[in-house]
Image 1 (cartoon, rainbow, N blue to C red):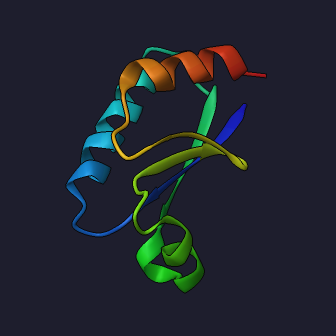
Image 2: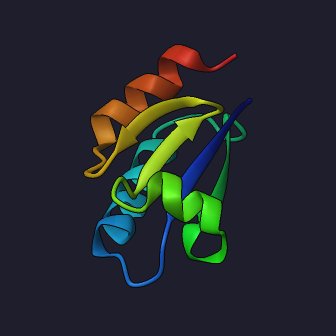
Length: 84
């Protein structure tokens, strides 16, 4: 199982659109392939400093999969190629 983290913030249209791309990509894969944790950076000063101008950010551990504008194909290919 992949443990992905999705960094977002309140009132972020790109974050909402990114979430739709993630859901679409994951819906094409087997169940239980990915555990997705959503983290709101507005609740943490350190995360705001790191991600404020980069959100939304989808990562697998320390590896950033995509940031800014997320797309279905990149997410799907990453999960398909890295599922353990």
